[in-house]
Length: 214
Image (tube, rainbow, N blue to C red; front, side, top):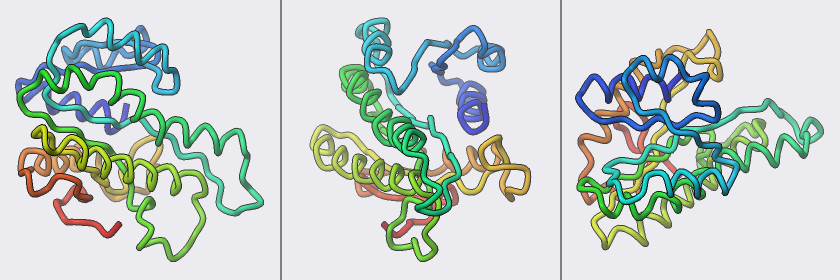
C-alpha cells in the first residue's frame, strides 16, 4: 500500500517488469491488479529473504527499492516500548540488509545496478534539533549508514546506491494531514532515480531532487 503500491503502479505503467513483495501475497490484490509479479517476503525473517533468493534463481534485477517501514510513535524516552523499539530497528534498518544481501547476485546480473533505500529526513543527524520519534530516527540513520557502506563497497562494480526521503506523504503512515500525495512523491523519486549518475553514488536526496544533510 502507500508509497510501495504507487511505486509499483508507476513503474508498471512505464513498462517495467515489477516484482512486488508482500508478507501475505494473497492479500495484495491491488498490487496484483497492476500486473506486478507478487512474491512473499517478510523483511524481518531471514528464512523468508533466503527463500525469495532461491525463488528468484538467476533472474537479473536492475533496480532494488527497499521501501518497507514502520513508524511507532515514541515521542519521549519514557514512552519507549522496548519491544516496539527493537521491531522498528528490525524492519527499517536490518530488513533492508537482509533483502539486499539475499538478492545481491541478482543485482549483479542486472544492467542498471541501482539500489535505492527509502529513508526519512528524520534520519538526518544534522537536522535533528527537536528529538522525539525514538526508534524511527535511529533506524533511518542506520539505514543511511548502511547505504553509504554499500556505495563504497559496490561502487567499483558500477553500482549506484542512494537514500531518498519521500516527503511527508498522505498514506496510512503519514496521515491525512500530509501535504504530499503518494503519486507526487513517487513521481519525484522516479525522477531522482532516472537522473542518477555515478557521481551520485552514496548520496542522500529528497523526492524533489535536493541533496539532504546527513
